[in-house]
Amino acid sequence: MLVDNIMLTVIAGKGGDGSGHLLRNGQTAFGGPDGGNGGNGGNIYVIASHDIGDLREFRYKKKIVAQAGGDGMGKKMFGRNAPHLTIAVPPGTRMTDQATGSVIEMTDTQTPVLIAQGGKGGRGNVEFKSATNQTPRFGEKGGEGAQHTFFLELRLIAQIGLVGLPNAGKSSLLGVLTQATPKVGNYPFTTLEPTIGMMGDRPIADIPGLIEGASQGKGLGIDFLRHIEKTIMLVHCIDLTEPDPMKSYDTVRGEFEAFSPALLTKPEIILLTKADLVAFSVVKKARALFKTLGKKVLTCSIYDPVSITRLKKALS
Image 1: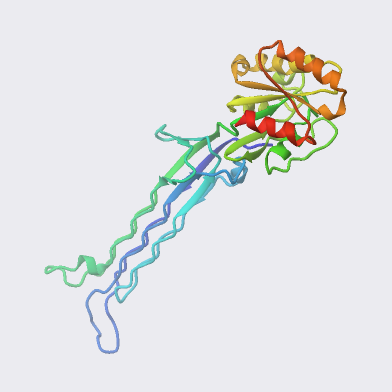
Image 2: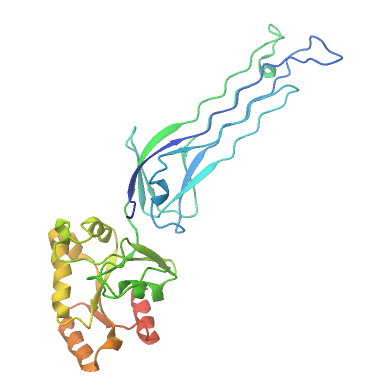
């Protein structure tokens, strides 16, 4: 199942403690303070990345903790600063801070966003030496790292969604349009969760097939209707080998209307698939039928490079 809503706690690294060490060696029995400062704790950043398809990484990992800074030591040795930690989420993820209600929309794939500041390292006793206290015997404790709990909601899985009844050729089509490798089979519900591929810089999702009653939870349920809601435009795949292609179209559109009428307003291309398996007269009749809807109608076969090129041009 695609993971698209999770609660995640992030804890930045604690700052290292400052040292209260006093100089002691073979030449000096009662030396002055020489304790170094502690290192800073690690920050936690988040960045949008197309390298992952969903929030599955966090399905069982509910807490992210950055490393603590190193403690200061004698001989004025400073503790090391902890490395920063960056987590990747899909573009379009909305992060809501549960304490403040502030919202971060993850769209930038270039610039990490700081979500938890690491604690500052504590000062060593060298920092506290003064004319009135020449031998401080304590070091400062490192600061605690910031802790936040976020609700992460995957709001946009793709710009373009491939929709249609089961076995309408959506997975095969995604495979030729992108570098994705969805499971393909000649039976319903081969695809059990959305698969995302990249056509240039455009993410395309193969949405699992819908059946009549999906808006009431039948088949694969309403989860995938929610994913369709997140796309910008749709490619409605209609299998030309079906005895009544218009009925197939109306079935899916009926589920859209029952779930959310707003789905009916999305920009849509009607794509008549598997054109290589039927006679030209069948293709011509179907094209004329769907043209009456006033929408862009294309035909294709995954074995016809010309039709695939035509589709890519329409999508771009």
